[in-house]
Image 1 (cartoon, rainbow, N blue to C red):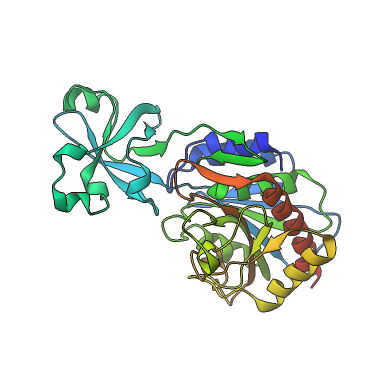
Image 2 (image 1 turned 180 degrees about the vertical axis):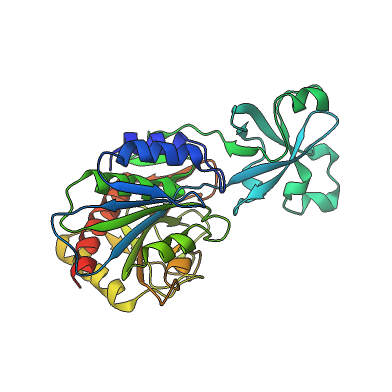
Length: 340
């Protein structure tokens, strides 16, 4: 995995329904290596020519969007009220730096001061309705010169490496999958494949559904990031998956029961090739497989995911060795699905 590519992707802002900057960058990276088109919702469908025609049509998919917020009103004091876009826990955003709108106006997420909270309020987790964005405006008139209703609010988070091969940044879900697909498209592949960089996964798998309908694949592979809870106070199956143990090959989540044969093949290939792998110890989460596997007459689908701590926060954390394992396993699985 080229970390410089992942960094560039993660630092681009693109919440659900606002993926244009991410899309433009991806197209700049793949245009010389494949044919591509953009569908009406904004997903990229890329046709990569391989050394040979494949027995089966295989679709590889990752989503471009990230979680964030959207401006819902501008208050008289110049602060902004927001609503979440995707599954964002309000507890992880208080005090965080953000950027607002296409002009990337700097701001900070604020909340009611602790000394002003009632005893009952202190016992409860905050809601987005109680938060606001402070952009340093003196009043509504000044704020309206800088932002508009419907502007997106993005996490502002430095991308960095730390510890023994760890990476921290925003939007690793799922710019990681996009990075893997870019690298695959830029490489020589043995068989023809279709790659879809889809929109609006975080708000209900919306882009994957029409993309899969258009491609009409026999098999699909989703490349994702998934929740790791290998942190203090989590034990046993509650850890779900762990950093440093390799690619996550899912058997079931809240939106998909994965193709059993593909699940078994993934494990066999990983074991034969010495690729680190693990599976989830909880039925939790979901990804674009949920829309893809029930498209048209049905699609045999599997997913390979990178374990990620603090998912859907400004500070997602992954381990480079897991990312490499995901990429190696994905490439071998694509070859297998093309000829199965």
